[in-house]
Image (cartoon, rainbow, N blue to C red):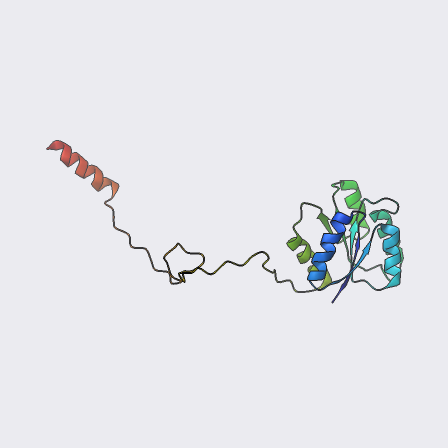
Length: 176
């Protein structure tokens, strides 16, 4: 499976994302800032980088500039994970070759997984998360009304007289 480097100074953002990606089967390397991220890139091969834009010390843009100057990282896919909606910084990152922007808090994990898989060249089939519907004790279909079975039958409708006929009958009754 692919190896992903997550570079983010906020542990509360980095750890849940790392846990989610490990659950998806990826090998994860973490870094707290751009300098540590560059060191991790030198230690082993990575297939994708999730990079925070604003960090103390070496920020995401500076790390990205350094990565693009290195032959081994020049074509490495980078997804910018940021909480900042700064158009100037985002366009600067785009010019340096960022493939996607993932805004913290705005992007659900399922969308993140989809983007990561796309940039790794993997096929994405969304997984259903959460609890499964409980089987009903009466054997009814989980989605239907109580007392119904899995078969769907057309409900019987009683034909109603048209509006014209209703008015006509009312008028005839009032004449009498």
